[in-house]
Amino acid sequence: FYGLASAINHAVDPSGETKIVTGYMFCSWLVIALLVFGSAKATRAVRAGDQQAIDQPRGLQNLFEALVEGLFVFFGGIIGETGKKYLPLIATFFCFILLNNWIAVIPGMVAPTSTLNQTVALGLTAFLCVQIIALRENGLKNYLLPFAGQPNDVLGWCMAVLLFPLELIGELVKPLSLSMRLFGNIFGEDTVVLQILLLWLSVGGWKFAHHQVEQVGSIWVAFVPMHLFMQMFSLFGGLIQALVFSMLVSVYISLLTSHDESHHHDEHEHEHAAHD
Image (cartoon, rainbow, N blue to C red):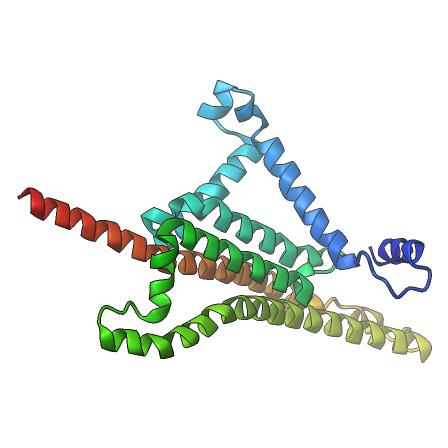
């Protein structure tokens, strides 16, 4: 998509200084289109009220249901009962990041997650979602008190003056750690794959230039796809990174909503004691 992006940018600004779109953006939009089209096609019969599709899912619908159910079971054990309604958000992060990591396998494509623009956007989106969820579940007071160490006496409030800035800095670092971890791993894997590929292509070109291809087997050795071994590892790494990112978001939600669960549990115990 580099040529298309370059043509659009030069049409908008002939000087080439302004970049409206990039090849990474086109690959990311392609992932979005695949997810939207795939999910719409998989749920079309269910949305139409087809009872057979509801009772006996088949094909793409069966694949999507198995994927969603597996993700909900896995992340549901982390996020807790209160946060289970946010599982669609976690599953969406996982599917979107996974396809962005894997799309580089297709010749001519690049992984959008190998650029900081994409990973920082994902990190900031996850951070804002977590904070909004925490505010919604706990309220402003219970949202802020954990940053101060849950003070309940004079000494606690004095310590809160020191704890609050530290806890706030720790919370603000989360989107940076999410984005840098994802970017570093995907960029590193893709770079190694590309360097191995270029190395072997250069070996083949050198043999052509020096007329050594007539040697038995030399041409095949020159063009052995050695990068495929690293490519397989990058597929596994892309899966792990999507899982780690989504898992960390689910952990953040669980930590920030667990105060609400304990608060409701204490209220229930007090009501039970008063009733007794």
